Image (tube, rainbow, N blue to C red; front, side):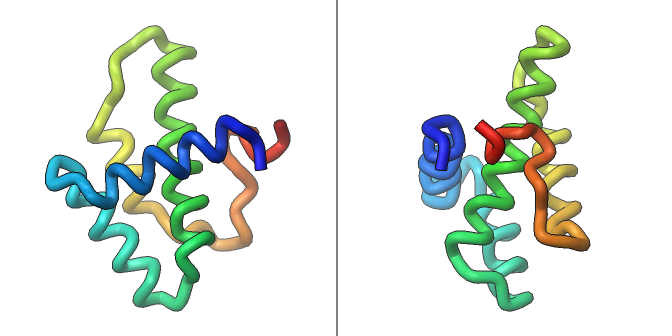
Length: 90
């Protein structure tokens, strides 16, 4: 696992505990109810966070919580997710 992905997964862990990001916990619980394990759920959420961060950098804009939530709402992806942002390939 890359350092970047590891850092994103750590950030997801913090979001799961924060009342300001209760929607991340909701996504976690939804995916868990579908039978996904903890590691897979955290990686998928981290992919969404990484995608939003990539867009921030590419578009020179602030973090877009609405976009992040939209990405989370799209989970799970139909197949085993290949990172949208290429972090798993680093």
